[in-house]
Amino acid sequence: MSERQTVSARLMGGVCAIALGAGLAAAPAAAQDTVKIGALMPMTGDLAAYGETSYNGVKLAADQINAAGGVLGNQIEVITGDTQTLPQPAIDAAQRLVNVEGVVGLVGALSSGNTIPVAQTVAATEGVPMISPASTSPVITGIADNDTLFRTVPSDAYQGVALADVTMQEGIDTVAVIYVNNDYGEGLANAFGGAYEERGGTVTGSVPYEQGKASYRGELQQLSGDAQALVLIGYPENGATILRQALEEGFFDRFIFTDGMKAPEVIEQIGADFLNGSFGTAPQALAASNPAQLFETFYNDAFGELPPKPYIDTSYDAVMLMALAIQAAGSADRAAVLENLRMVANPPGEEVLPGEWQRAVELLEAGTDIDYTGASGALDFDDAGDVGGTFAHWAIQDGEIVTIEVFQP
Image (cartoon, rainbow, N blue to C red; front, side):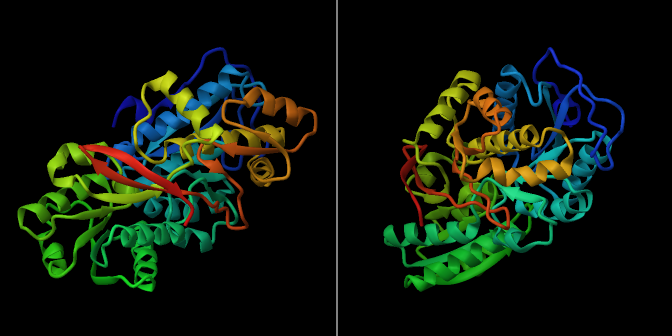
């Protein structure tokens, strides 16, 4: 584990003093000189391909906020915890961030299979605000979290419909499905299968797979047959193994993906010749929207060209919303922050866009309600902490991930 993953990520210098003892349940009572936010990121494991880029979204938001004066006049300090894309390490990282580091709130985790246990065992019991930028399982909507868990990405109840629509549009009416055996995989497989069959498609077989295996030939053997394509709902590390073995054994030669496989690393490992023509869906903002264009410019200036991966803009938005709620609450009290999350995210209010931190602070100090419109789109939290959204129909063409269209299912 690197120093970056275990030690505080100090984003800007020139911090000011602030006492955060009051209201920080289970946190050290001593005065602190920064506002601490925890970032649960998969820096290793099956989702590691998204860890660094999602962290860049977190860091970009924190850097912008600190450069514009910070939260309540104090600098944000982002402290990372590596989930390793596994439930128990995610819980352990969250407990350290909450009970040892004393963070005000958590941004993450990415995997639904990590986010749900963290929400139930840490956030709900400690009253800690938690915003996931990537956990899409429909199960999240109904879990008992004491209204502590929010997300800046739409549920797979919607992505399942989007993927069914795109698959039928591509002229594919029979598919087999292999999915990672966790809340994300099972929820999306069920949502897709139901929507696909409603549209006249046939799922010839649906099989879960366990992470970390050397061979998935047995699962693929069960699915081989009359299907025109294999729907792979998983993550890059094990997903690449599944693709390689499907091709080597002649089980499948056409593939359909979801957001968890939208990574250039997959193409690099398998080869463009074998994946050209593959397609999928993923949550994505309307590229022509002003907030999305602003975000892309900010990212390009800070890190270089924005990669074609999900969760970067939603990670940025999660930090912005957490910080806005702290600012609106007037303190780092966790309960007060929770009370203000919907206020800063939902209408009515003066619209605030990415990069407009100083303006947001001025509006809040003047007693004006605000409505943050994120880089990923409108972020109006419902009673369950869910948001709506739009989805990209993306494809692999000439070895590159390209967006065909962005639409609302």
